[in-house]
Image (cartoon, rainbow, N blue to C red; front, side):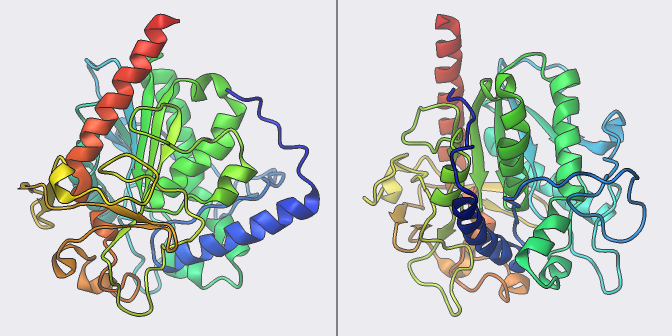
Amino acid sequence: MRHLNTEHRSRSERQRALCRLSSVLCLLISVAASAVFFVLWRKASTEPVEIGYPKRGDRIAPADYADSNNWLAVEQNPEKPVDVFFIYPTSWRAKPGEFPIAGIDNGEMRHWAKYYLDTRASAFKTAGNIHAPFYRQLDAAFALSQHSATTASEYFSGVPYTDIKAAFVHYMKHFNGGRPFILASHSQGSAMSLLLLVDYMKEHPEVYRRMVAAYLIGIPVTRDIYRAYPWLKAAQGADDTGVIISYNTQSPTVDAPGNPLANENSVLINPVSWQTGDDEAPASQSKGSVAVDEKTGELTDLGSVAGARIDPARGVVITRVDRERFSSGKESRAYFPLGVLHENDIPLFYYDLRANAELRAKVFQRSEDRR
């Protein structure tokens, strides 16, 4: 792995890059999806925050991950040689007057976190032993109410990331057992995965070297990010390891005002062909999609219905499926107009992701065996 050295970047260059990243961040917050902070950590205060709105820079006590109740999933008898650390997407919205950070025991969040474990994390279960923490989430409407993207990101990367980092440290110490691991996540969870990569992994390269791959699905991971954090690598094919896999899906047409996750600077990979070019991979090449019953969490195999093409001008993956059926629900249309397929980023390519995670895990293991 390359030496983690970014000191050559000038202050002005860093500020310009961070301004561009803040623009991406503001968009993600505004659609109740994800937000990422890409600025230096400020020195922590000396006392834990117990009231108000804790944010980055405050000393925040993490949730207790020695408490088994704070784990969504732990593989007690891991049989596979690889683990999967899964971080679920936004699973909670604050009610009027409610504190904008979900408690670790929030019933609504826990219910939908389990739903996402069953319907999204399950795509990766054949590749590794699933481990997933509960974590306190920030309400997107509160973040949107802040006067700047920077201020909003400070709140977002306060409590949620404090929990995820503590959970990952606990997982590494008590559950991992030295095995290679996959990071898998969606939306807000992918923002947390990215924070692990730019913060924790920088300080722990020995852990980063055991990462098979990071599936950061549902957020734009841009060229600016790779320039700012040069130890990160984007996937270039189906079987490279230690890389980030990222994409956002939409139909060929999206209703006004358009896809808020589209970013022309996104670094994408086609989840059917596993290539980075803009050639279309037809649905016949896909290994299969699933339909998700929101009430029961049941998955129904649909066969090969979703092809994929990278649109570099828009920074998204285009797929020609029934946009009425696969767009996010009507309650989310204010954020995700018809044609934005964010909610189905994983289900549309469920078996493609499964096969790819298995492949990368095997390639990583073979490379480890040769050492």
